[in-house]
Length: 556
Image (cartoon, rainbow, N blue to C red; front, top):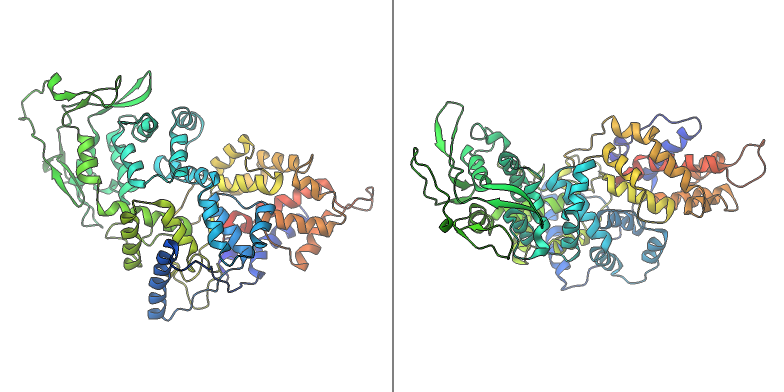
């Protein structure tokens, strides 16, 4: 059975539009896959790394006797790459401009335009806000906005700031430049819960989880020890939240934070400043019965006037300088995450469990990407560009016959849209703008909270919202009125014209004859109503059936 069909959700629909939703869900299976690969200029940075990606995958396919899927058409490419790099579907004008571009390098040129766009920065901030901090709503979301965290993320991605600099600003939380003050929110929001901080730092920057090492060495990943868990806690346990006139700050003490941890057998050990694959940081420990005194000579002036003083021996600084900088997992974790964002799963899956218990499916490829990322200054945009320009990225989502392992990357893996991708795509399709109503965005974030889930599993909240959610239905009704693109469809000469316009605006393709006939028959007003090409009430219902189908809800 084709892979997209397996992910279709047949929602409880009303009357005649049940057939429309099924048609939209199945439609992508009938679209022809055209073998047209990207053309990348010889000698470009993207060409070199993209060629390395394709070469590594071709080697494994040849060894396994795998024939990969064909390349995708320009129509499919432009939808896919807009969703992945801009966080939304293209407008009709953007789609037409790309398809009408005669240049053989148009795919790479489109990738570059998207990577330098404000849409890209907004999309990356959407994704990394959740990956780094978890999904927020209500007061927590408001705080992230008020204290500049969200704006800081967006500006960092807009300027293509190196990932290691972004990470150091979050971990040190003591900025020499005022522009980096909002980065402290990464630690501040965790409210002096040092175990929560450690459990966030490990997957966010090193690509593996350490929760299981709280009480004992990991039972599955031999390299993850209990000492690493409590050592990571110790690096941060002298920090205390303080809300100052200048905003949230993490004040660090020069004393305290010495303790011991016990394993499941009751054996106690000191929580030394140590972490995975890094030498322990020396720090003189006081005698067990000694009381530490907080002397002024233990501190030095802040980097900026008016900021909290900093310890002469700062555990956070030593973590950044002695553990984080140059750690081999930093580059590996980030390129694995970027690969998962564009390719549907990581080279290590799940992408935040890069320990010895989880196989690296293509170790040479991961090494090539990580080495390139580190040697080129932790350039996120460079890595995304190379992946998107590769033949591997531009393959069809039709699973080839006889190939079942998604880790082969022999076909493109479908991914559910994030809440933000979904709402912005709705706005583009129905209203011609990229900013959906705030109430709709908030509701969809609650219904679709996941970003880069390990597997696409739909809970009850999403189908209930898509079936009966008042904010979605209100947005569709409103879009069918006024001067919005959806409303303009009602003024087209025939119901067939309206059906074609609806499919182009939402799915980026023409309807096939069966779909066109079914939608046109539904849109045509009954004989009892005055003659008109399209019934507006049915127009928004038809749009609802299409945008809640799997074809719209998934990037494929």
